[in-house]
Image (tube, rainbow, N blue to C red):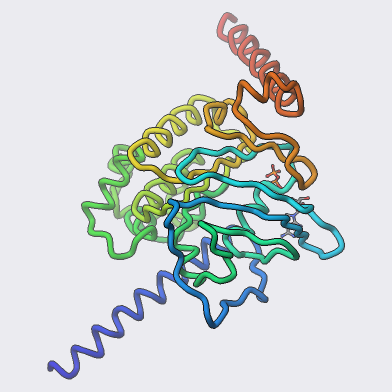
Length: 309
Ligand code: ATP
């Protein structure tokens, strides 16, 4: 019996590893098509974070097609433990930065460093495990709510799954589903709203507890109320632990309190600084802010008029 149980235990851990990497692959696919040429260097080492997670892009040039660069000689630093926002017109390459960091693709020239380690010299699983993403559209697997959250950490006990859901403020909602945590979701199960999906993604992330967090804000708006509640919760979660967090944002109201705002335009850094500083500079950020505020006030007025009628 003893002889048998050892290899079975061993197989168990291999199976877990395998499942975890398959899940990482799914996350990866979600970050869009995988470039098969990504490979791990034979001398790759696990990621170490002596600085606490500083991300540096150094003279990065990249395009999905070599002759059509999306990022052009781009350099920027995301300081460790800070909340940083990346904003800019649609298509300027915000999500591409994230895909490169995740090594869904490799840069054509330049390099990307995390705490001074070139990401090409880091073991892939170690790199991807350190990065948590709340993607624009959270993929749900055809499985129970509980399993969908547990994908963040397959070894988590049920209490930890519940605690994560509570912190992401989705626990009560889950209890209202017919079979609670055992309710099937995904394409063949219960369909849930965009905001609820994001909260499930947050629960997953809380279980994974990665040192580097990315929020890829959905282009299609959640309603303002849902979004504000979600952001308030995200900020609450960020407060209890010093983590590098990056918000790829479309609506500036969700990120104006960031420690640093990086404004991209046509694949280069157009400007960066704090909200006030950028407003005073009167450049692209200030223009985007003014445009969004005008739209916002207009919507508010229209909302009030509708309410009056
Ligand atoms: P948005 O604000 O609209 O989400 P973004 O700034 O995040 O946009 P990216 O998604 O990084 O922009 O895309 C940058 C450019 O690269 C766009 O022109 C886009 O069409 C192109 N692109 C993105 N993904 C791919 C891909 N897999 N293959 C080819 N081109 C792509």
